[in-house]
Amino acid sequence: VTVSVLYWSAMPAKKAVPAPESAVKRAAHKQQQTDNFRKAIAANKAEKKKLKATAYLRGLKYSREYRAKEARLVTQRRQAKTHGNYFAEEKPKVAVVMRIRGIAKVAPKQRKVLQLLRLRQIFNCVLVKLNKPMENMLRLVEPYIAYGYPSLKTVRALIYKRGHLKINGQRVKINDNKLVKDKFNNDDVVCVEDMVNQIVTAGKHFRTVTNGLWPFKLAPPKGGMRQKRRHFVEGGDYGNRDTLINRFLARCI
Image (cartoon, rainbow, N blue to C red; front, side, top):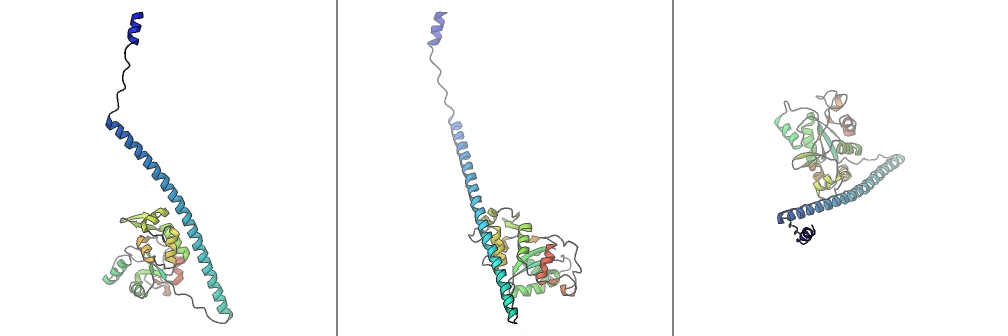
């Protein structure tokens, strides 16, 4: 018994078999992937936090500007009234256009203009900058559209509730400021409030923002329409509604 114990204790220990090189490389690659993924998540989180702070500050700045402008207008109207004058209101720069008739029996020229305005379906809606050529186009297709001058509240509601971006030919819901920043790749337009500001003030990036938006798909107006083959001033629905378009769109958004 003693001899056998000595014999077994004298046997050399087995050497550890090294792992295959491919397995070592695979493990290192997986570890590298995990580290990169964690870094990307941390960077994305930090970027979102920074963007959120930027969006808040810009929204605050725009809100103050809108209130100051409104207060200035009220003061000017009061001064004009006090001195027995009339206050000439600023001409609207932006119009909101909504198609209220379908595709049946549309003349070729009117069909082409509606296509240029991106109003291919009934109850589609777009925002356009007002100038002489645009006014002529709107006048040409007036029997098929209702249009007017949107308020800040209407523009906000359209973008926040019905806004979709055009990304790689796809219609993508606006649910994150990062989508806006990546889409426009512009320091002046990094959040939804920037988009609203560019549209309301007809800013220098108006065309970029409106082209980047998919035409708004609205619901039929709650309570229905009156007579869409009659002009608005005759008790119908089509044509220029001025600021009363806001009340009409509130029933559709």
